[in-house]
Image (cartoon, rainbow, N blue to C red):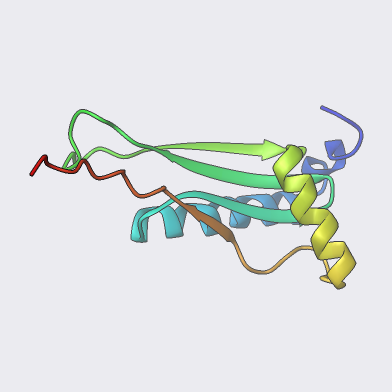
Length: 110
C-alpha cells in the first residue's frame, strides 16, 4: 500500500466509507446498462466497479463485476483536475457512470 491511502483502512470510520462506496458503485451496474462506475473518495483514492460483458450470449443471467480501489488512473486524474478547477469538494457525491459504445450496424447490400 502506498502512503497516500494506507490510512484509509486504519480508521473504522474510513473503512465504512470505502464499503459504502463499493455498494454505491455496484447498484448502478446492476440496475442499468452502465458498464463502469467510479466513486471519487479523495484526489488520491478512487473506487471503481466494472461489469464484464460476455460476447457469447447477451441474454446470459450471469453477471461478473470487477471491483478495484486505490490510486486513480490517468483518465480519472484528468477528471479530478477538472473537479478541483470547478471547486467540487471531495468526496464527490455522485457516482460517475460509463456506458458501452453502441455496436456498429452492418448495412445490407441493396
